[in-house]
Structure formats: structure tokens, C-alpha cells
Length: 64
Image (tube, rainbow, N blue to C red):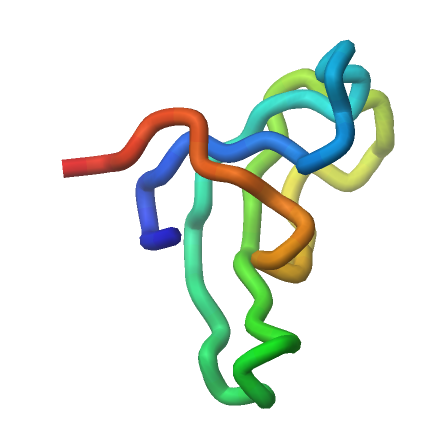
């Protein structure tokens, strides 16, 4: 996963949680706790940008 990738949450078959673009990667934590700052497009929360664990997301489309 890298900046610019289009992502969605794993285990979200109906895509209720939306799609997002990775804005930043935080690799400063232990390898199993890496986070990505994601800008969500069709999420229903008020938070459009949030930090999410990378292992809970999958890449739909890679950036160049």
C-alpha cells in the first residue's frame, strides 16, 4: 500500500464503509500496526479523513 492507492475496508462486501485514497503512510509503529491516513469518499461518518490500520484495508487500484 502506498500514497495515492484507492482502498476499501476488508470484509465489507457491500462497500458500506466506502472507498478512499491513501494520503499518508505512518510506518513509525510496529510492523503489525502500520497506519494509513485515508480520505474517504462515500463514508457516512463526519470524519472524511482518518487514520486506519493498513491490515484492515485492501488496495482496489494502485497509483502510478
